[in-house]
Length: 144
Image (cartoon, one colour):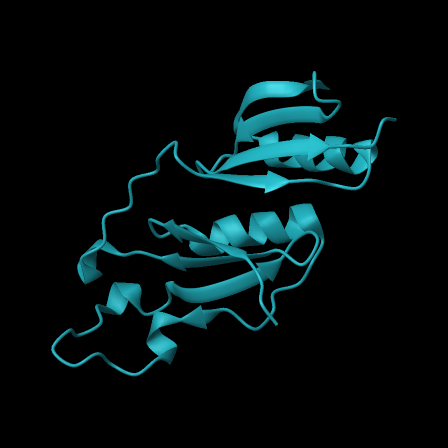
């Protein structure tokens, strides 16, 4: 079955981020967290001991069949993670109460860009950056 997911790279904070998201959404990981040390060694690229326990892959269902996936992107493997402003995860909860709950939980320790409010298109909309630098938009069509 086709699906859309969002894949996030973190600088050694994937596990903390996904444990936080798991607590916010109240869902369970699709499978146990896969660690770099669990996989086969890459030829010509030895795995640093400090990287063995980092997250190689994690998947977390959130809303409406959408899945967040993530990995640590360690410098020792040639990655440079630069959080940017070019990506949002857009959530469209069924109720305003759920919109308020998710917004407050994800905003904790982060920064609200636009508080939840009535918009000209009829939605209840707001945006924020969570404490891990991930940008979230909310748009609830329910009127009350």
